[in-house]
Amino acid sequence: MTSTGIRLHAPAPGWNIAADVVVVGSGVAGLTTALRCEAAGLRTVVVTKARLDDGSTRWAQGGIAAALGEGDTPEQHLDDTLVAGAGLCDEEAVRILVTEGPDAVRRLIATGAHFDESEAGDLELTREGGHHRRRIAHAGGDATGAEISRALVEAVRARGLRTIENALVLDLLTDADGRTAGVTLHVMGEGQHDGVGAVHAPAVVLATGGMGQVFSATTNPSVSTGDGVALALRAGAEVSDLEFVQFHPTVLFLGPDAEGQQPLVSEAVRGEGAHLVDADGVRFMAGRHELAELAPRDIVAKGIMRRMQEQDAEHMFLDARHFGADMWENRFPTILAACRAHGIDPVHEPIPIAPAAHYASGGVRTDDHGRTTVPGLYACGEVACTGVHGANRLASNSLLEGLVYAERIAADIGASQVANGLHARVPAPFEHPEKPAHPLLAPEARFAIQRTMSRGAGVLRSAGSLATAADALQRLHSDARDALDENGKTAEPGVDTWEATNLLCVARVLVAAARLRQETRGCHWREDHAERDDTAWRRHIVVRLNPDRTLAVHTTDTADFPPTRQYRQPHQEQ
Ligand code: SIN
Image (cartoon, rainbow, N blue to C red):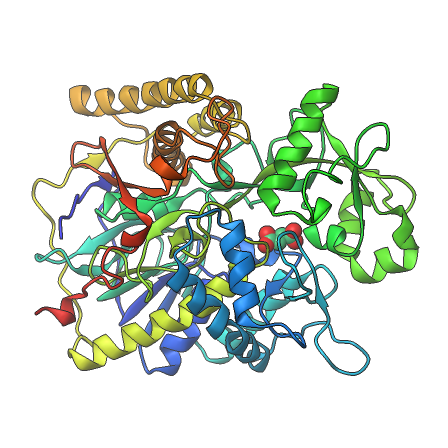
């Protein structure tokens, strides 16, 4: 194990807490892990960046995919997932997802989540892109994430779990042997736990969600700034597949300069029969794929972008006028309200839509138990790269991944801590004397990064656009590094500067991987390499951060992913 041991420039911790496990993030992955750890008797602390229900999960509309319907099987769900993943899924990881998924959903229901049911009391299932069957369970029509979040937050409160809100995680603490010893974090609170502090624990679970804020327009909330991936890189962990950013095809178009979180128009709207049409009312997806509007998401996003290019248009339209007012009001109340809030009435007019950044298919590389390459550090949910999504996540597989792998992680932590007497041990963090600080970016850099990424590394990429993006990012990086190395100067530590610094870190890795992958596959679209190249590129791009803050990039064969299927944890030393 090599520990890069770079840390963000930050004040020393002014307060300390001890636990058996600290879970960072409060979406479906984080809260499920926390509930299962607590049930296993582990002292569990949940740390979350805003309020408990402010993460990405709350915004999920379509639902959660699992083979729960009559006649459906995990094998069929596996097939659809592998097709969407475009040759880069880890089949074993997918098999775990689809076989353990149905029971994980039943346990979520037992925890208190209410899904929509038919009059006969069966789960109502819908379809989304890439699924050959109706297998998406949903809640409140199009408010699935909000219902899951409500149920899990209530369970966490009922169980009396210790939670720390408004807390930005900064860095991993390690002991003298490079094992996880907790995290440092900054809390915007009052009283006892305010400012920079530390939670000491031998196991840390990153469930920090995505990095959509690295682009100007995204469906992700403002907290999705890649903090978990950046922390993992600084801690010496490997990240993989970061070039595969999924752009959701149908995001409400609010103008060419719209920035930040944009309203999603769920794929389930197409699942229930809405059509994509151009400005002339022509259905342009028919004939491009056997599933037309319900082709895998990357194909639909590309179809929309192509038509926009052909027509020199800023957006396309989603036409669901034929649903009528009742169906809109009952099945898609959230989307109806969002459209109306922006002056569009989908009952009477087509909805203007365009693709926007939605989901990171890659992330911190893990094995089948959520273990990263750093002992004691786990990753779960969007921040992780379990191998389930490959080059393109199948719609509504992400909530399921969060559930299934959370349970595996909790089981692994419980087993290892009890077996090895780590339970109740407070690890002693070790400050490596040479541990370099990472220079900080000024808060305004966030917007420069977002524009750079949207222009150069968005839906359409080329060698030229990516080189321009890489140069701009390198300038930001070098300026901050030189100011620190030569003059000891860095931007004032604070939430905005730490977030901007994390965004730059993940943007650099994403662009480096996208430049290297000279082919078009899944949601990575190179205009200068339009074809999929299975001879050269049925491989994963894996990145680590060197101690001098440069990137160490290598590729691995799909068969080596994860390399040994099991990262060795400290308790398993042989
Ligand atoms: C949607 O409802 O279209 C989003 C579902 C997902 O991203 O899995």
